[in-house]
Length: 153
Length: 165
Image (cartoon, rainbow over all chains, first blue to last red; front, side, top):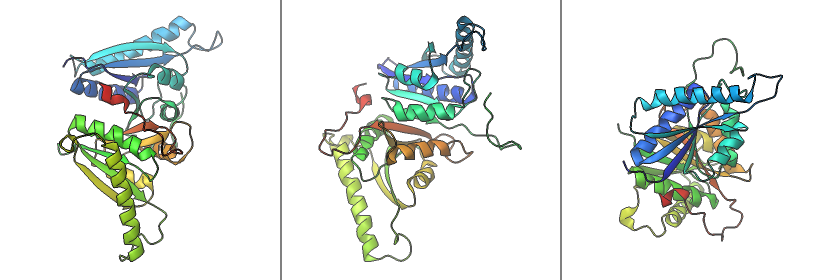
């Protein structure tokens, strides 16, 4: 389908929630002709923290983006997906990147390899501050096994 | 696949019109049925046998929905409007919308970007429901549409961002 200028930004964090969000976004964009910007937000805390360098942090973000995109475009080979690793705090960076987008898509929560908080709080902050409609894609939770709730990585 | 439904949750504030504008545009694009839903909370007489006060309250809610729908569809020829159903259900908004969302592809609510008022908390709590397995249908997603505060009813509605595409 021809590009309609419709622009969907989706937050990808290396979690299953991010992949689900990306899959939803790609299906939408395929159906109406549009572009998906898959965004992984990275940051670097300094020398005392992991990852060891800004470059490592950025590389990790790009790698998980590449993996997520590869996983999803298998089912939608003609989709236009632009991967972007963006420096910043997750919610702020996503809202800022999606400033002129038609939709910002997020998983309902996640425990990504990059995020230290569950995406629940990121989604919540995005919902409260975004300039465009925010789509929250549900993630079925496995039944709890003893421990209560999700433990941040 | 039988579902092609969008549920839009509105209350009596001007925010509802802005939510409906987005939802109407989206329903047109998808060829979907739009279900306009309002929760009927805080009415002591909302269950049990019909009574004149309850009938009057219901009629008022339906009429408020209708005028918001008309405002959201302003300028659209009748033939271009999506199929729109009205629902007024007893209960709190999150419970009502969670129930209706089971048969929907999208459930749309407004959020007040300046924070904290009722609409935003509905979106937040609905998003929280998404974390429970099976609370919403596996395909239904939540769409939180930013709305400007409804304090000034005379203000022109925010044009739907999506319509330009």
